[in-house]
Image (cartoon, rainbow, N blue to C red; front, side, top):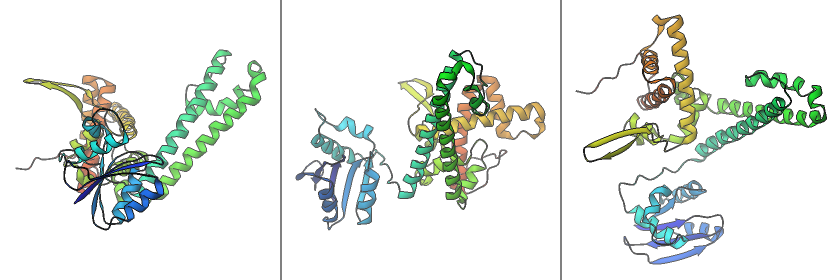
Amino acid sequence: MKRIAVDLAKSVYQVAESVRSGQVVQRKRLNREAFRRYIQEQTESVEWVMEACGTAHYWGRLAQSLGHQVKLLHPRYVRPYRRRNKTDRNDCDAMLEAARCTDIHPVPVKSHDQQQLQQLHGLRETWKKSRTQRINLLRGMLREAGIEAPASTADFIRAASELVDLPELAPLSCLLHIVLAEINLYEQCMAECEQQLQRWHADDEIVRKLDEVSGIGLLTASALTAAVGKPERFASGRQLSAWLGMTPREFSSGNSRKLGHISRQGNVYVRTLFIHGSRAALLAAQRCQARTPEKLTQLQRWAVQTAARIGHNKAAVALANKLVRICWAVWCHERRFNGNWQSTKPA
């Protein structure tokens, strides 16, 4: 099968055709429309090799719709195969060499719905950061004027409209009300994103089952399904956890084996949601132990004991690691979450 490597860009596309492994028979440099025609002109089945970067999933879907095979490679795995200078030509050669390595797992081509869901999460995260910037700006200005403000974000927003009208900030009052309006606008945008997520996943059975897991809400469940796509490509929950960067980073040589902090490789957004959710689940377990210890589930009991042994923050990350594995099991085995579930190893 002919293999074609493509170095994607905004308007210039470098192409390298290879019929036999290790040999480039033709090179082309095309603009966007010419590259689209070039894909459509391939009458026989072709394996397209591209880096998993901007627009790669779009072109991958286009090639797949025409009956071709698509292999998206992570840029980190392509880089070691590039020789000498970084040029579009050398990048294509590096992709052809990396595609020959069977141990490199390609990135699955995302569907249009998956990408839209991820973009919705990206919009919400962008608005959240902008809202936090405005809130911190107001807090700093109030402190400089000697005005005390509530620590809670919700309480601060409610009290801010009165605080900015105090005599100490009278010259800036009109401008500060504009900042408050921006904060309210960003909050409305975030709420609209959450409502859109609820509408999209109202009939999604997988998201509903993941939502039942302790510390996992609609945001985390929908972000996980959009990022993973098909959980069957992970042989176990630990592989999914390692893919998200939740497993320890290893420094080993010979008979010496050392495990350090978590690798933090993979989807930063999904990993952040899991860790924040595990913090909430750990606090809920500690409250349950203080008030009604007889209602603690096996998972909550483990989380509380781990926090007492290694500290709250490390226990939250360890719980997040366990929650990722639980989500994989709930998703793959199509069963409901049970905090007292005991898995048994096959005989």
